[in-house]
Length: 250
Image 1 (cartoon, rainbow, N blue to C red):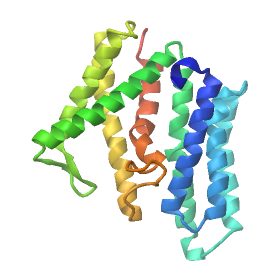
Image 2: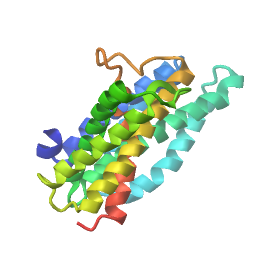
Image 3: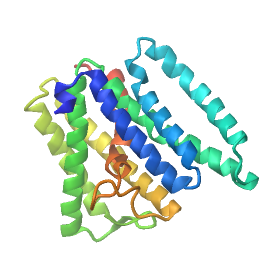
Image 4: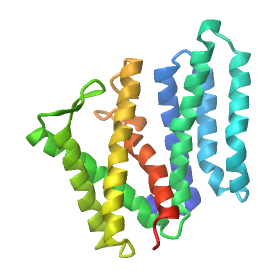
């Protein structure tokens, strides 16, 4: 409802909140001793997501990566905990920015395109139908492990079922609220974005296994943290945005 009714700024503010919470969760997993820096990183992540709403957004977005690298490099330079862990801490800090706000900001950019609202709904449909279909097809038919080292419960059958669910989701969009979506666009985005979303889920599972945690947080009882709910969308956002601006004819 917020995606449809709210303007770009309101939508960006909601995403900025998600980015800040996700960054706190990431720091809690990757850099648990860096509590002070985690709050600064969370506020910075929120600001990055809001950047496209600025009148100087293109210049601002170009300047941010370099300034961010300099700022956090100097911050960690003068706040050394253990010098043998300094490179490790800096690498994880910068990974957090690349992983969360730099991917999430593509949703704001997508919202600003001509059919931005429809495309945001398409992403949500792809991810939700993919997750649901993957769960049920994996439960019913799953016998071959997809990537056991990273996610032991996921199956190849579940992944294929998830992609079928994504195709159903985009076709639903085409024949209801998004007639400008061609049949090619519907199938192509379902398969590509659906597959990328599955890889996003696997990537977060890889991070959590590396950090030795089951969930990114406990904010959503029974479902983990905000980052657990956004892992597929984080990877899907830039792929969809670049598809829209380079391939989609409308």
